Amino acid sequence: MDQALETRLGTLEDAVATLKKQLDEKDRRIRDLEDIEAIKRLQCAYGYYLEHWMSEEIIDLFADHPETLATYVEGTYLGLKGVRRYFGKMRYAPPTFLHQVMQISPVITLSDDRTRAKGRWYGYGTVCSAPVDGKIDPMYMAVIYEMEYIRENGVWKILKLEFQMHYAYKTLLPWTAPAAKPAENSEPPRDEMSDMKLSPDIWADYNTQYPSGYIYPMHFVHPVTGKVTTENDYNAKLKLVPSPFKPK
Image (cartoon, rainbow, N blue to C red; front, side, top):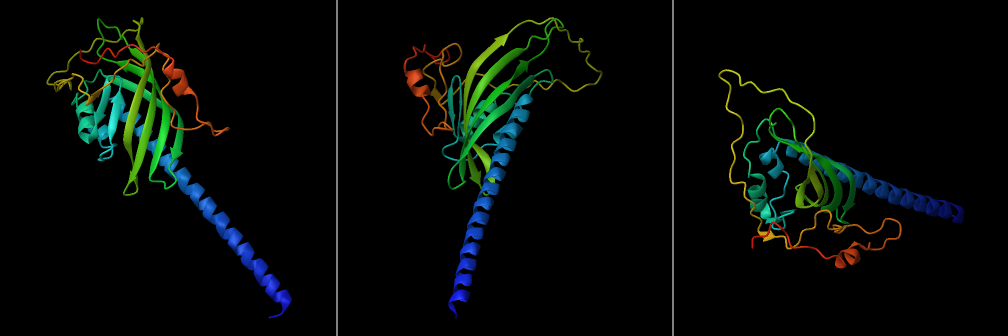
């Protein structure tokens, strides 16, 4: 083989290797984007099911895994059994119940092997129940979700839901709702309740709700500097009060 042909073949092999590397990188990026979109869909589905407390649908979003948990202001519920105990508190939501929490502003971080991911979301919305004297008295809320997800058999599921209530407030608004007239031979209202008492496996020690100043730790580093952010240093200086939910 003459020198010129050998040089051209070497150049061609280098070009093919470069193209393969570029294609592999683009394929990885596409798969990452597909995973992120699947996680967004999972989290938003949670919000829609929560709206009417569709407990079975919510529970089915969680992985049946030893690390599964759900943390709320009162404490942490462990395992799928704990998740079921929390969301199973109300077997059927009454027609007047509305719990609309929008899942917005996600920051999602995939693990290197794409089997796990973490996400931080804002939740904002309202909770309404039966009108009193024809008036709707909604509660407004703003929350933070720190989530962890796991891929099982190719399907993304919730592994950990950690929830911080920023604030919730109620104010009687001058809105009126038409008085409901029960229809003849109508079905009874879907208001069957089970035990609504709080029963976490681990009670929260402190009240981190507004106006405590507490910043729920972020799972991601600074996107520009790559440094760990300073919320833990800030939180260490706070004088948090004991949780009002923990039994005495």
